[in-house]
Image (tube, rainbow, N blue to C red; front, side):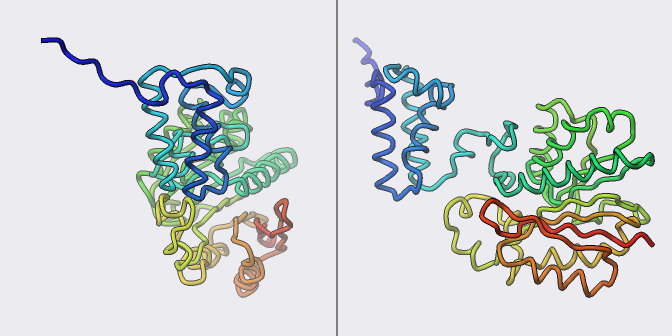
Length: 308
């Protein structure tokens, strides 16, 4: 008796340009806010290529297994799953970072925090001879740690800079370790698991503290709009007003920051004045300044401790 061959998927043999049109149409029906872009990214991913290649090869066709995979990815995106989880990576600050549901997807606004931290370290290394102690709280997928380690490979290797990245989630730390390893800097960064600065030995004085804490209000996380319904709540929920963890971390600054030490905090839209007030209550800051994103929203607060 003759065994029947499996029926080919409807996407098999379809030119890439038509695959994009079909995927975009399906995603528009599901109210995707970026249907065309999502379709191009998913089709390119099915080919194992990028969008540039896809645009240059509109007549390319997929083999059966890749076509079946594309159909699955389009349906998952239609259900709301983030592109970064579907592709398994996020392009961020010229880095390709592994992403999955163990950690928050690195955001464009966090590039501002990474750039600010890098600039701060560069200035301190240029003006000071003593080793710098830097700590990143809530590292998540390890994006900032990777960016800093790549920029300061030599300083880290020579001991002029010591960098630790910590997170409350063991799963997130596992993903961070994978990203550090894939970028060849795992040996330059220490990882620690624990709540905020609890993993840091008492008496440790930090020259630089970098933190992108959960700062969304619980109600916004509950609504689960966009990627929020897929990402780990632990990495999103900042409590009733979004500042629960920020309050706790700021309260630790007088003990944890070295004289002239700097804390850089990513904050949510509209939170800058409230965080400034928290810092003012401590009467320890030598200066507080804010950095805005491209929309003019204050996204990063720089808090410097007085010299003495």
